[in-house]
Image 1 (spheres, rainbow, N blue to C red):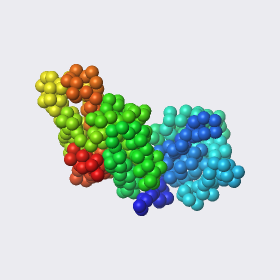
Image 2: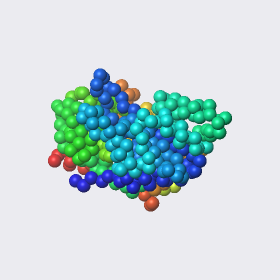
Image 3: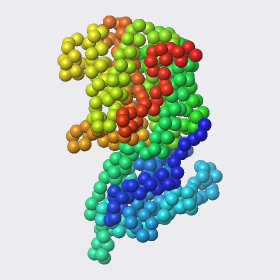
Length: 439
Ligand code: GLY
Ligand code: MN
Ligand code: MN
């Protein structure tokens, strides 16, 4: 399988776009995520901060990027761990200062330990500081320390940035619209995740444990070069499908139940997010089929609303209308359609929203409203469309509907004329699912 990837030029272009928005007189400081300890000498698997990686392509911990647009000596400085043969023998390779310059396009690079010496000098040239306050409290206090250090020198003619701007807002707006190269990675994440869901459908049978199905998903992810899921996989049979963020994945699958799988791969720091729901025994019961086709109709109506110019909540409104009418028609909710929607009684069975932005983070960055109104879709935005119905045991309906939890989730990119479903190939109709499971 040919593996798409981003190049140093892609990252340089991103920095150039950001620096044009910051302009001369501004300086941006961005630290990557810290490592976290699991216990004793064991760390959690390291994942860089998405904003940091988006701009640098640098995946090591202990790194800080500084951008000073228009700086003569070079706009982009990278502080990182220096080469250290002994440390690298135990913990793995480092790019070092040399690699930061040669492989990652930095104009200047320094060992992280020199931050306290160099950074105040870079700050001194600026009127405006761009920094995401609040995401990394210990780094925040260092940034404030550098500012205060400069303030003690104003009488000596040193300049201190007077304004602090939210760097994250600028980067998130940039991340919201995906470039062609990013969409390639997202397609890869989607394709791998589709293959994993198909594998799960083919392997599933009553008597297996939820974690055995999870193992099939992970096997397919890693086999295809996605080294981590984008979020903890949800593999919930029967009643567990009605727990929205079920993560235990430790129960036995029983005959006659539905299995809900919400799982997506992370490929080169880009996420897929797919949910499929199917009967453990390969054949939908009549209640399961009725509710499944209702959720599918809601999802189809929601996807049809994803097009440039439509507001963010148009897909959700479309899904709610279909689900509310269906629940009413089946006698699972009382009242007129207008009442069910106005009083939000449908929320008893459909209690979440219909989607979220998708990108490097599964719940990706980018705001949903601007000045209080839903923002409109634009080409290049990627979102999930994921209506569901969850009828827990003891719901006030006939017991034949109990323990049916269904969600259908696809990843959708807004195109110039409408949208494209990146995860279309994961079987979704009753017929396609039953056929896949019979293979
Ligand atoms: N997998 C998390 C979500 O669907 O939002
Ligand atoms: Mn989702
Ligand atoms: Mn999901």
